[in-house]
Length: 248
Image 1 (cartoon, rainbow, N blue to C red):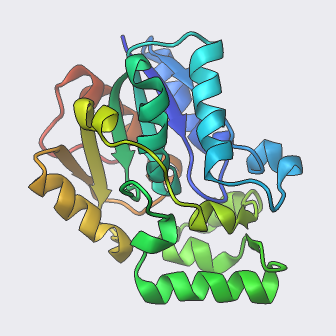
Image 2 (cartoon, rainbow, N blue to C red; image 1 turned 135 degrees about the vertical axis):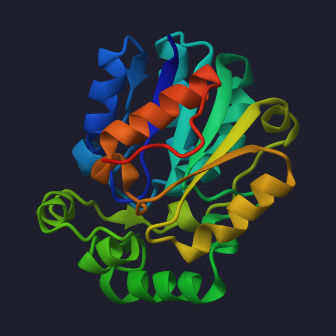
């Protein structure tokens, strides 16, 4: 059995992993799904001071206080940029880093550095216009971007989205690359619909010889297809991934 730490992306919280967590729990895995500072059920901590280092500390503190080892660290979307800094601090506690439809940064890069320029510009303008200059408001346009089309799911997810600190998008990720380089890295993309901003990371993962997989679903796969997402994560941890992961 494997140990998983599931880290949500921007505007989400640990709540988004409920279905995945329950499926993995039922199979006997040990699962943690923390909520990052200022998000989800910790939204009362949202402030202009929350940034990348805050969220790195959230994860590394969890690893230390729970004394976790051989962890399969699953990073969704924004959380992918936390991989290098977390590995730099806690490499010895990690078995693998699994980028689940995630952004990837190198040392000194921010999230907006690796987003397409027009997207980065749009987010800065949105924060200036509707977020007091320091946060992105949780708006329905993000559900459209993530390919959340089911009406019931849109309603459930939409009312739980949390404003996201712009600083988490502009802070550089500071880390030495050696620790992350030594770890097993897996990239899982999605194709229905794809998120064009992520295509370069899948291409780079393949070029670097990482293990890669695709799911035929949208960006919030843990919400739209929790059982299939859990099955793929379990298979990755076991080193026995089906050629085409099944979807309901």
